[in-house]
Image 1 (spheres, rainbow, N blue to C red):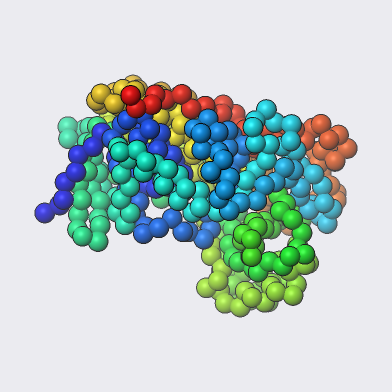
Image 2 (image 1 turned 90 degrees about the vertical axis):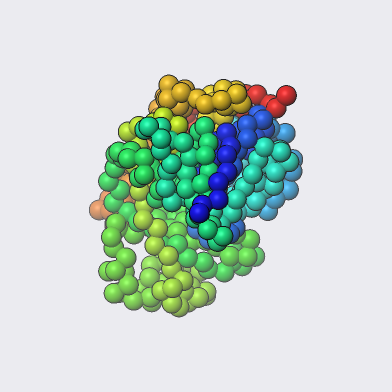
Length: 405
């Protein structure tokens, strides 16, 4: 016999979209339950670029000072090493935001912080080790979810279900939503390599004629992302670990003395890169946001920030009605109408990048620097354009949902 709970809103998934939506709805006085399938938020290879748009939201919520006490690095200018030359790409110091930098913060620290803050609201409840496995549907309306816990099954009935359970969303599949896929010619290998005090600072990445190595500063180690051709992992394995080690060193020579730490394939994880989005994000009683509605490429580190923007728009549009009862499918469609345009724009840019710039394969282009990159090097003012697109993005959201009265 399944345990039963009743609430106003249940959120499947405790990632950035789910926790932020839960925080904002609870702040507005909406009873909300967030269900997260894992026992904690620690996942080794998750996005950790907190952009100025998200930092601005933290300021609007009165959380910024405490937030910046969490472990992070601040990057005010993104540089890239392109075919051996270090070039500036984006300058955040002129942005019209309070924080003129990207904060590189491990996602588990971000989620731990935000979920702790959310627990100060009596209407917020977070259930860990609670995996959503199905939807509850009455007369074609979604009325809740069924979850699996260490103690047995749990049914949570709610006026609204928010699907925020990631790119492999059980919510979107159980709802029967159709997804549009955009072919991406790359995958990525993720791994750890130790860091030394005299290593170079954080950059956008190391580019070589269509190939890319990303190094994210984790304090005492580098989280490394190495772009490979789609479906090419078996071929790389067949070539052997020494060849992969040599490939990494060819991008970042300073790793030569420790790349042998990658001495077993179990230390190297495959990330299958996807770009897709749902045709419809909602139906009666259900709306999907974040990666559940639109899977993004890691390019630009925009995924976490776009998911948070979705959560803010959802709270802005729905919180007041949810405080007193159910919302209509027309209300839910406003979320998609608000957030689909920026999603389309960013995904279109990512598709272009992966088809023409970062392909995972060696390019025949012999130019040491592409013309656009030369312009950024010659005219510093132009660096504000990528800074705005990356750091703020199209249609940034600002918090204006109600507070509990």
